[in-house]
Image (cartoon, rainbow, N blue to C red):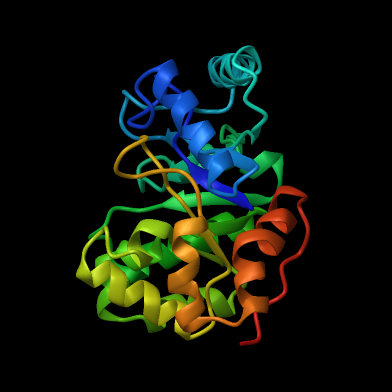
Length: 246
């Protein structure tokens, strides 16, 4: 399986806080059925977590890859980020290409304030799309506006934007509202990808095998394969994702 959303690089954001934790997360991923992780540190959150595309990011990513080799951990890791769509500088960042897309593809993992309006989110997503990128919407089930009006996510899906649900939401670990919104989107057939959004080795963990029993309640075997393998593979290879038909 392929995990497209994971905060596993140490010391770069609020994810792994040591090399030991990062290695624990990598080993747990392998034990739990994941052989490829796109590393997606937070990007553009205040001055403390910039993580823009450039030398500093490249050095951190290369050091992490070397760390895995040093410890003989055969996890494939790829570059990426989780871009915070700040209204203050989003246009400038997009135009300057200072962001790390998922494995340098057209796909850009994008997050928002949890209490942002649906209108503002849609405007930001449309701005990304107009620049030739495809938004991958990080955990829409966690946003207040989607929890109150799931049709917002249906509209994004209709535009060809990618809906990425969190494993933790579907396991009920991120609150009742996130669980109900996530399972609703899943049962409606508009989810494209399930990812871990892992931050540590204890609470928000790597690995995707634990979510499969939940998926089996709502999805066919074919749809589960799309969510965990086929669509993530299309994204890292920069391939088109057809709309699910379930």
